[in-house]
Image (cartoon, rainbow, N blue to C red; front, side):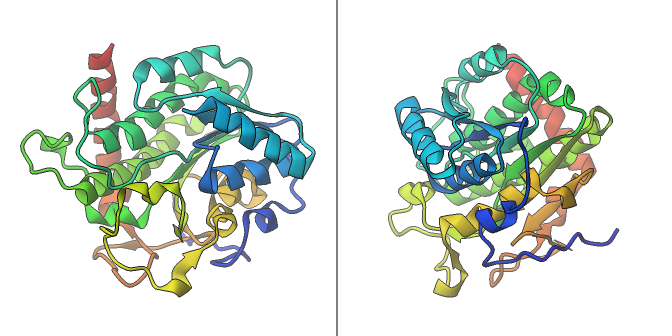
Length: 310
């Protein structure tokens, strides 16, 4: 299968990708939409005419962002709703409250390299927030997505997935010494595997899912680093938030992605599957993150974790 390529690249912005696209009458949810690339993803989608829900923990911040987006785009169908991805009850409340079809679901929110922390269910915090919360959200919104017949799920992963596969026998660091980067990498691998399996399971419902690496962007995501980064990113590889949101918007809105799913994108283009980590580039996706058997295994494991939380 040939890699999907586009006219866009590293320097493209979300607004450039969205230019000329009309999503009037479509509805989108962007998690973590009150800051960073989530805001710019939501802004670009709103500029196309889509109704956009910012699914956020801090509703006041989300409402301020919604007003700002309305001010810059003229789209009044932008609002905020409460969602705490680390809390299964919050996810269930959000999905129960949703009414009508949903056309675009962007899994954007996340935490990175945070200090050791566990949810009330005993789940490692990054896996709980980055993967399990989004998994529960998508499953809870499945019928709304299926109602459209051509819905898209966009999953923001990271080259950080090359830090670690999913460690099946110790996902929540019950035995391993906690390492924030291994935990982050595992959660980002889970993001990619979710897209692979969601696309396989739900293709007959007209739902496609793709994952992406947004690039290196200075946002609130780095708040836990305190100089402890996994490596210094060269200045020429740093993107603006507008550039960082471009690949998300491409996967969410571009007609080039009609019917395309189960793939991984970097800089607005599909990237190759690799067998070795590439520390000098953001290109490539680890083979273990695209493996269909791993994807099915993760889905089953995630269902079991959520069932135990009930």
